[in-house]
Length: 480
Ligand code: NDP
Image (tube, rainbow, N blue to C red; front, top):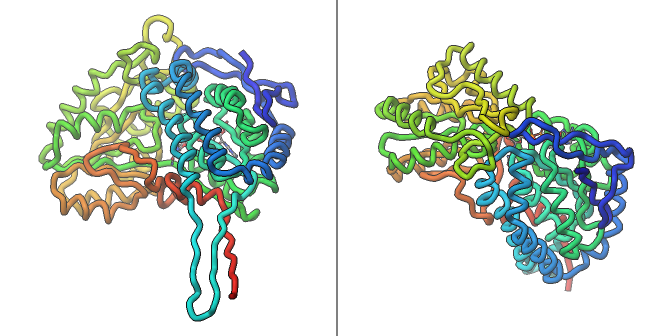
């Protein structure tokens, strides 16, 4: 099967005529071909987006909303086939794609289709100066959206939805590792009647297509989710061009467990927050800190729960942990398990490759892994692994655990488990993190600001903030 680019409202071959292999990670084999696009395809996409901008930005919010709602309804109609496509392409359990990834793509479009109708401008009455100011919010123009492989359609649409709802036109690139649902989305855009050129999807590699989008003079803003190292290259190119940048980057999130927590709820959630999507969620809590009085009990119970997880064929309903997205990423995770042991860590559970019987015997699977005995400042505890691997570390005091939690370069999210209300507030205020979950994890309300501090990003997605990102303010002052 050959995927195609989506440029100017039509599905198109890459200009080079070249294709890249796309793997099914659960079986370790190539199952489709992706356009190996280059800067010429990006140029065509930017031209199409520019041509569409005048009409789309002048389309009334309720008309825009109606089209985007149609798109949401089509994704919902195709939920089963999209979930299967996502699971096959990414390796995640199909049950997860069905209940999280695809419903969230629907929600992203619904949320921004309706939010666009409520975006209001401000006015300031300049009392004493006989003047009034009003502030226009105008869509910035052609924007670039670049997303990663862990939550493919979920994150791709999280950027595209506010961009087009705000009246921008888009050149978007999904990860070359997981392009399938973006291709399916292009077909649904055509069916929904999205005007040609409003969304353009160019497939290909980051260094070729991604950087051509970032460095294109006429792309006014970049919304990027991915690794911190990739972003350094992006920022180097985009910053001197004075582009607007929204950057959602890596994490090394602490999960802090106090002895007074609701233990059963904490345990069930900690299994999810550690290993959902094979630990390949930027919000997973990969450093688990446990108050010393319950450390040994937690270690036993956590290991027992972990050992009960089913690792294997993503299409089996009972599977909890699917395949790692690619061979290079599998090797990266295994190298960190090795590093952890060289740094003096002990494997409490997991730590090895899994070779399932049957059709998935050639796939890339890792048993969820718990490691203990490591100092907070070693590489294993400082660098993002982005896999089903967590460390566990005991602590005695709030100050001590805050020191551990805040010691990393990242600051995306943090979780705190305690029934002590004062402590919960104290911790929330002092954690260096864009998002703090108290007694829960990944409880999302799309109206809230989403993003990281320190090396985890710049700017916030979610709510009206994302719509504002895709607009430029213009103040108009009238003297009367
Ligand atoms: P990457 O940074 O490798 O890739 C992200 C996207 O950028 C991909 O589409 C990639 O293309 C593209 N890209 C790669 N190089 C360039 C370049 N030079 N110029 C422009 N674009 C480029 O991240 P991963 O896909 O490996 O995703 C994992 C990372 O994403 C983790 O660090 C994770 O923490 C982070 N992440 C952050 C989230 C957040 O909200 N903060 C959410 C989810 C993930 P290609 O893949 O085709 O090379």
